Length: 429
Image (tube, rainbow, N blue to C red; front, side, top):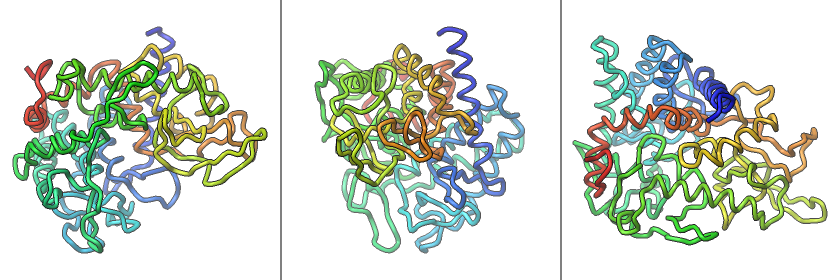
């Protein structure tokens, strides 16, 4: 990595970290889902903030005292928040609603009690336990509260009588009809659930989840398939999968880290081939994932009728794809394929996608979709999202220093979960 690239990453990391400084409620630690006035908090964004604060301390973006206070404020809120089956509570059975009101901290938008977003929240809490190890009253309270909150989650209840974990629950309709099957962002659900000392998932739950994996060969690259790039990243934010393998990966002489590398290469190859003829797609302009978009609308662009989506889980190469790219998703693949990610980041930097904005890159842009007022790169999202900002901060750090990965390798619950899921080798030995 050149000195120029190193400085670029540090600037981008600090700019992205600023989201958690300014979009967090000082009284409860809740983090706004996206940078839009009146928008609720996302518990996944809170989990990413809890993991990002230690990075901020190590990089000089925030004092340790400030990080301790922010972390304590957050944990005290969740420890004291209304918990139960009432429709306006904050959580139930140890899990929390996907969206919470920024001020009251109660359920927002009639959202679901989310198993996966709760898992991201717990991962952030456990990162705080691993980092704040000083023998002070405040840091001791961080460890005690975070540990108790993780232990409270009733993973067996979230199974709702079957092996695979439910997506969630609402007080109005009960459990959602979807379960976590196949390779997706739920890997961290199963590992944290298997590692629980109080209400652990059974081993067969992991087998049920992995039983519907889809192995594909695309552009001559074989890998465990998922279309949106974020699926190959979010569990990896916290977990170092280098050299450790479960039964599925042992059979293919692979690990999940290498699998994410291959998924990243497929994304770039898709952009180079550009089968749908979208503007700007090339070797240094790619990144298709769940993201904000310019739709919903249909427009004729240069004689071609194009359908543009709003927020949707875009994927490559099988779609959906409407020409919308997410620079943050490229940055979050930095540890997997730096040789193609760094030139792409430099290209996005030249495009000034972050110019005049407070938190680094905006969530997404679509150079095919015309925008008013005109922008040289077409439509650009007016917002930042906490779920985007966190992986930028944390994956830059994992690439540069192994920091969060090294913290989480010390987490006994995660180690237990990995071993119960059948992982062996590498740092687990």
